[in-house]
Length: 111
Image 1: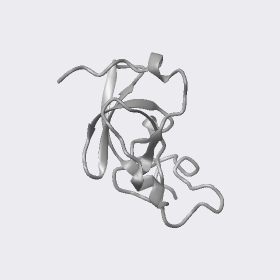
Image 2: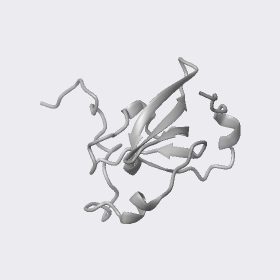
Image 3: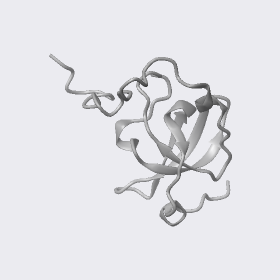
Image 4: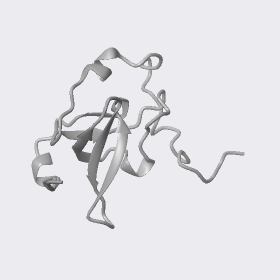
């Protein structure tokens, strides 16, 4: 019997790797440079369990507000709230190629 509750419930295909893409994570994933204000897409990678985002953030676009050695802080818009801050490891994000992301994401507040 599968677990019907939990953080990874219902993510059988969401966090799975594509065909012939399993195994070691490519080094290009770790060599990308993220800066404050960059727009990124969140996509959970099942091979790396640490720092994986919650399933509700999968496929969302956000703006980077903090950068650490292994993780990135992202501001993501949500339907029920204004925005939410999520800390994610760099394996689970990539630079957004969408043209309309500047209009979707609100500017970062100065802290």
